[in-house]
Image 1: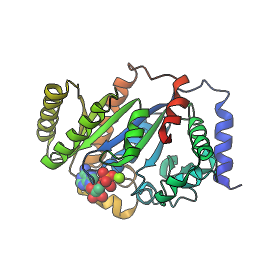
Image 2 (image 1 turned 135 degrees about the vertical axis):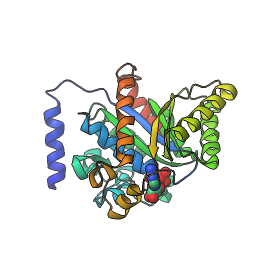
Image 3 (image 1 turned 180 degrees about the horizontal axis):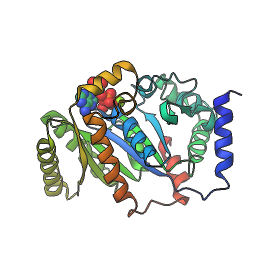
Image 4 (image 1 turned 120 degrees about the vertical axis):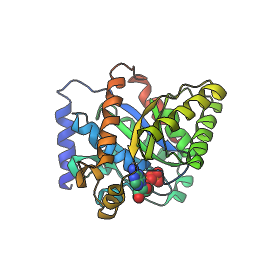
Length: 287
Ligand SMILES: Nc1ncnc2c1ncn2[C@@H]1O[C@H](COP(=O)(O)OP(=O)(O)O)[C@@H](O)[C@H]1O
Ligand SMILES: [Mg+2]
């Protein structure tokens, strides 16, 4: 048994004496790729941690998993080990900078199609164990509405859609929301506008999207906040260090921090979908 697994078991063990947490699942997604979902997920997680919440980031981008690369923390075990039934959920949770808990995606998606019923059952049961372990699970998905991403959206309490002010990113984000709506899922969406020149551009983008979603989909699309275009993001990626660790005072870090603050403000007034449903929702993930 390695030290990390030991530490986690201890963590889990000591949790039992405390009040049981209600775990809220947030899926982070986008229409177009490369809009900043993964960087947002990581730094949003760290901003929530800074405010005293425990968070687990789950790399749900099956094709292009890269959370471990962004964190500069090579993952010993990943999602694939769990899916194959080789490791338990506690063994695949890795610890990144600032003690951030994450599950790396790994590669080898093709193997998934060969999973047996028992393997899927094992996967769902293991993921279900995360209930109460942390305050928030963030699913960082791939771009566009793949079958897998639709599942992650369907089991979440809420979906955060990331877009940039570019028209291509906006139309793709809208198309994704529309598809989810047409699939009949009643998941609340909120918008994050990344890489804005200024707040005015962010507000304009958000207002446009909100209006179109309201008019054509009858859907409320509140904005969670804006993140400025900031070269420190690219710098942090190159250093393989999360932005909020490498550049805590940068404009983008501050933007994400404001988003965490407004997210938590809303969060306290929102009901979750309940503890009992957690496992059933997880079973839906790969069934
Ligand atoms: N706020 C930002 N300012 C400047 N560049 C950014 C910003 N957010 C993201 N980027 C750039 O976009 C790239 C892709 O980000 P990433 O989080 O990997 O996107 P996704 O997960 O949506 O594919 C980053 O490596 C960085 O260069
Ligand atoms: Mg990504």
